[in-house]
Image (cartoon, rainbow, N blue to C red):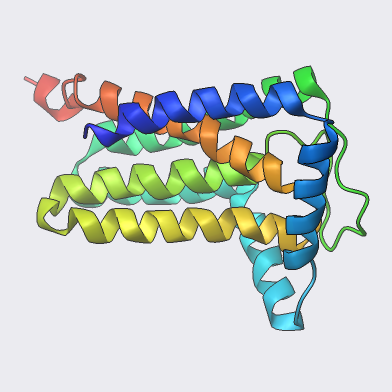
Length: 206
């Protein structure tokens, strides 16, 4: 898909820009304004965001990827995407840790409504939500190309909600979420590029 390399390039540029202006009064004001809009809310929303936070964390997302991957492997015989999905999520978390502990941005000063540890920028949950959603959309499009628009629309909505949930819980700045999406777009493109050029494992069998 032509849009994937474009979003990867735009995402990379946007991430570099955000990393450059971190701490500026303008970005801080934007983060505070948007963060205050989404922070907190009704009990049902906070509960939903906490549940999503668990599945969007490192352990939860890898477990979910492994379960979906097992279904792809044993039900559809799709070993390439089964392994690729897990590797995409795992590589996302590795990259997130490297970036976070290189930049070391503090988290918001709001009262956290869910547990959160480590630096803030970029959001690992936002990265995970974007990677999981769009890689699954790519896989679904492979099997049902006529529904490509539906799969990518659902992926976009799921990723956005996964990112905004972190604002509801008060554990990330708005720019952390955008930065997470930006980096994740590059990983999704690399996944698509690799998947289109790697011979499915079942074809390698005699």
